[in-house]
Length: 325
Ligand SMILES: CC(C)(COP(=O)(O)OP(=O)(O)OC[C@H]1O[C@@H](n2cnc3c(N)ncnc32)[C@H](O)[C@@H]1OP(=O)(O)O)[C@@H](O)C(=O)NCCC(=O)NCCS
Image (cartoon, rainbow, N blue to C red; front, top):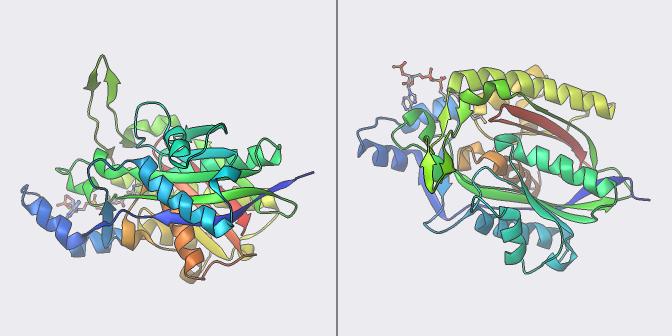
């Protein structure tokens, strides 16, 4: 009997258009908005982000990430029996980006659905996939985070538009006799809807309300550091582990100061924190699998390492997954 699920391959993809802070600052200056590379780097740790071209959607980014993940796992798309895509920027209102991705992978029949938990989406999706694998509902799952946040940014709001980017990351999660995912801990508190949201919705053929991202950065910052510490501790407790057992912390890549604050609270050295936010900004649900894949391909995170993944975002939602790679 299969008791566990385990990540057997990782992949990621950033669209080719890389926009440095200086380039973005120049574009914004054309709109009369003032910002600078220095301000963005100092407050966030972000140096650049990647933006998709017109007509490129989340499922396109997801497809590239999945191809890399499948190759790393030594699996073909035909072996996949579950697809979960975490996204807040789906291709369409419906069907799901997961269903569109399935078709682009050239397969049909297996369950495919999206998870919407904003920047916590990947840890939510991984937890759902783990549960399905452990109950025998799936043996070889693709778990993906894919976003085109450039489509929902207000480029007249310097407090938000400098922070986000587009990208995708994916893992292949397979049934295993040995423990991979050790424990997870998920939460939501809808009383904080207003501090990070895209409040618009489609009605009668029109968008009602603003379809652009709104955020109270300071409120998000304070809440994020607190809940990330709590989620990490709760997950460690469920797994019967302590902070000392963590080889690598891979937090949601939103802001270097949030990541460092979380590491400090967990008494983890900064050399144990995987940071890729400088290269792609906040890619919401894609950020954790992007960072994981980058760390695996760099040879930092290796098979057997104990890794803590942590997400936090709109909703408010937050959660963590502890795993042995
Ligand atoms: C958004 C964030 C970077 C702002 O940093 P901060 O240190 O809180 O900065 P403040 O909001 O206090 O703004 C400080 C000043 O910088 C200005 N400012 C804001 N954005 C700026 C920008 N892009 N360029 C230059 N100046 C900017 C503000 O207008 C303010 O000016 P003032 O003092 O004259 O009023 C920070 O709050 C943050 O990272 N929050 C969490 C965001 C996040 O990670 N969200 C996603 C979670 S899923």
